[in-house]
Image (spheres, helix red, strand yellow):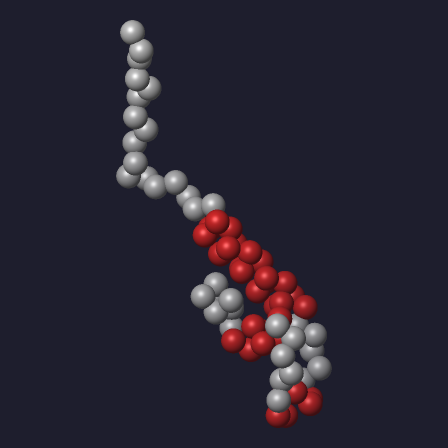
Length: 67
C-alpha cells in the first residue's frame, strides 16, 4: 500500500495491527474514510498491474490478405 501512496500509519490500521504507545491508548478514531481510500488506492494499483493501459508507441498491423 505504501507503493500506492498510502501513509504507513493508515497501512497499519488497514492491516489490523495494534498501535502502540500513547496513540494506541488515546486515539480511538476508527479511520474508516482513510482505510476506504487506502483500499481504493490499492485496488487501482493492482488493476493497473493486472490490466495495463495499452502502449501508445505500438501501431496495429493490417490484416494479411490471402489470395
